[in-house]
Length: 499
Ligand code: NAD
Image (cartoon, rainbow, N blue to C red):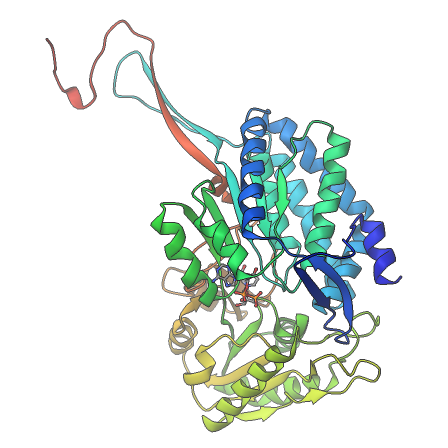
């Protein structure tokens, strides 16, 4: 299916011309896919105003009814899974299996949100005053600004939007400038669900195509109580203080530098498969990609040569081809930053296996690389940076305490794993003195997420939690209500104040 037919099937109508156009190219071969119109500052102000009007209506729609819209959206996604998954692959270069997986994740969060729409529980709290009742009510928050990264161009928005919509909020979305087509397709599919629903206010979802300048206007807009921003730590460092300066709420999902520990008792065959997918899957362009591997000295000689051999067999190529496991990097700067990190690793004493650019016949405009495994003499230096590419730094350790300390000795705190069959080691890793990450796994890799569990991480990863558990509370405001059903007026803390 060519791109025009695909966009047509998804309901995306592109303008032929405009004053500010953004050319979208595919990382598969560098060829142009389409041109999309970019929004201006005035458009941003107008979008927020429309979203605010929508919010004023939507907040009064009962939550289970709001859930019905999200249920319909889930149905539309099911019907269009193949087409949207393919578009994600064309725009990001991730393999089709993963493009489809991303749409499935959107469907899963819709299901989760529909269930939540009949919950959104508040507490009742014991009052110290006779004849009084105290309770907590969760109200819709307002316009949610969503800023998203290129590597999960649809799912991250859906995590936010599905919850925000059942919580009674409207959404203004600034997707990555590298993946605007996926965003326009998501908006068109959401619009289909709104039409089927029949009573969604216009402006419930607005998409702003543009760069950082447009995102910055959203960030500074006092009418937007929540900014949910996913991307690099650099971006979070710029966004967070601006939101704080106007007392807004920032929900940050930033960079990771994820690690795994392989202990002597590990099932090495299972560990090898898990490490491989976590480190090279999505061409190393997941926030949860495995980037640092600590292998206990006793099993290093058995595991690492097998891993290097497996790296050599990973099929890199066109992400639409059914047997490809690793597609291209997003663009040339990504390839350059990978090569520069590998040069630093060599300078720091690392032995690099793989990592070179690969020519894929017929796809010469794409930035394909062989995933790199780098044996490092010690932890530190370049190993502590997140390079958004398939580089796995491998290091030896002696004691579990040392491995945990090194794993935690980076600025980021997103995801982590241990491979062990020793219960004491596993529980130590999961304990308060173990991994300092938002995600800590046993006998599975650190990459990927399942809807239901809260997703996010500590330190420079930003501290946000999305998608599962009680992440919905980010999109609402709690009010504490005290009701007096007595004829007296006692004051709290026994304070006497009589005229
Ligand atoms: P990026 O930071 O370059 O861009 C992300 C988004 O932020 C884009 O929409 C961009 O336009 C916007 N942006 C950039 N600078 C901004 C600024 N100063 N003010 C306002 N908006 C700004 O990130 P990327 O290259 O698209 O994505 C890769 C990064 O995202 C990696 O660091 C990865 O770990 C991270 N990421 C994190 C998660 C997570 O959940 N923790 C998920 C996906 C990606």
